[in-house]
Image (cartoon, rainbow, N blue to C red; front, top):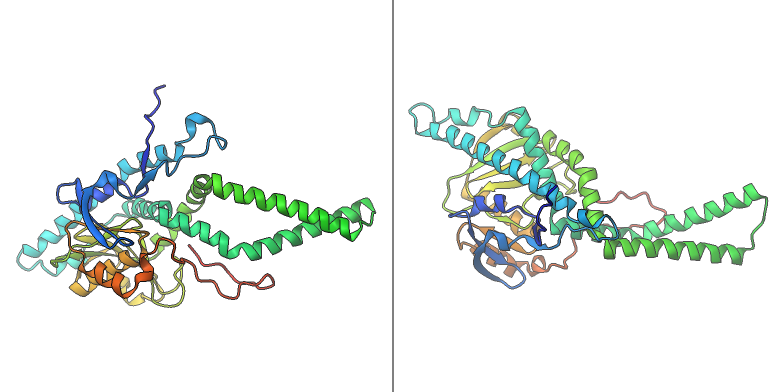
Length: 355
C-alpha cells in the first residue's frame, strides 16, 4: 500500500475553508494582532504550524505519527463539498429577492436538510476543537485546575494506603506514609507534565475524538440562522473561526444565553443561538436573515476577540481590528488568560468552565 506523503505544514483551519474568503481562492488578507500589521498571503501559509498534529514517535508506530492529519485531510474534502452546496442553496434562495412578489419569501425557506444540518454541526464541532487557540485552552485548563487535581491525587493516594493497611492488617509509620505519598505523587505529576510537554498533540487529538460528537449535538440543538451580508464590509474569519458570545454569565457552548457564530464566507455566516434565552427567534430556525452593518461589526468583533493571533478578510479592510486592538491591547497577546475561574479551593464543588 502506498503511504500518503508526509505533510509538514499542517493546517488547523483548512485551506479549502480559507479559500472561501479569498477573491481568487488563493490570496487572503491577514491582520497580525500582536504586531498590529496587515499583509496579503496565500492561504497555504496561514492558520498552520509545522507538525501541529504529529504524534511523538514514542506514542505510536512511526508510520502513524500523522494519523490525525490524514483523518482531517479526508474530512476536508467532504467539508468543501458541503460548503459549496450550502453556498449554491443560499444563492438560489437569495436570487428570489429579484423576482417580483418574492422578496419576503426568501426568509421563510429552509436552507438545510436535516442530514446537511447534522453534517455541518460535525464540521463546526471539529473546527471549534482543532485549533491552536483551543489547544491553549486545554493547557490553561490544566494549569488553573492543578491545585484541585493535586489535592484529589493526594487524597486518593492516602486512601489507597489506608485500604492497604486494613487489608494487610498493618499500621504503617506516618513518616513512611508521608514518604510513600510524596514518592507516588511526584511520579504521577511528573508523568502528567511529561505528557503535556511531549505529547500535547496526542492529548489534543484525544479531546477532539472524545468530544466532537457531543459538541455537534449541542450545536445542532441550538436555533440556526444563516446571516446574509449585503453590506460593503466583508465578514471576517480567523485562526479560530468558531466564536462565542455569552449574553448571560457563562460562555460554555451549551450555556443559557450563548451565541455561537461560524462565518461561511465573506457574505454568509452561520449563527447558533441557545433556545431558552433566544426563544423569540425559533421561527427563524434554518432560515436566511439579512445582516445590517451593525450585525457585521458584531460578528467581526467576535473574530477579533476570539482569535489566537490572526484575523482574515477578503480585502485589506481592518480598521475595526486596529480600533479594537488600540482600545483593548490585552486581546492581542497570545499569552492572554482564556479562563476565568474564581475561588477554586480543594474543598469546593466548583464546576470548570465548559469548552
